Length: 300
Image (cartoon, rainbow, N blue to C red; front, side, top):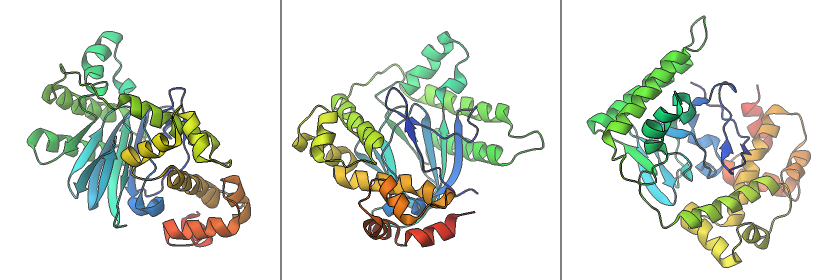
């Protein structure tokens, strides 16, 4: 089991998040994670081209997909489709252990014809922003395949990770999705323009979080007014823009805490906080410990 999370992220030209894959040359992310590793037991909202699969192993959490809340309990899971805004959290601050698997559709790009006719009808279908994985036979089969994929990826042989086996499991999962979803239906979402605006603002925050940001700055990046900016954050992320910024700054600061010997003051200023005192106060509020104790606990 690997509970360490890569806390750094960058963005692509389409404003989607760049995934820190296990192997930078192979687009697959497979980890065993703990919800307590995130500020306030809540990940930062993000999106990417990769399909995201979550399987709950212990505890429970809630997943927010485009503003819709889905409760996940032990044994259940979720598939978040390509380019959907999402994050997991626990409003009760309870621990949750889960497998997180991100797989790029490009792994199945045999040729353009196959990709357009058998992959994109699933990944580009806005009728299915997510799929709740339950005890229903075919959905439970996906969970079993995800468990096997996790085992395959984390149990390496002398020859290394068996990539063929991983792709085989992914192909089998995609086959189940293609056969059981109504891939001929292409849903339309009234909120697509709102989500585009919100994504633009989130991208702006990620690119400027080290600077002093105001509500006006954020609203301008989304070409909207301040009240609409706040409304969209509340509607889809269920938090204010300023709280989102605070959580992002904290998350970004974790790598510096764990992987460098910089002082708390340096880390605070480098990540947009007004000083070490405020950084420590905010860190304790969301992590229930001090930055120094967090460093001692997680540094290797």
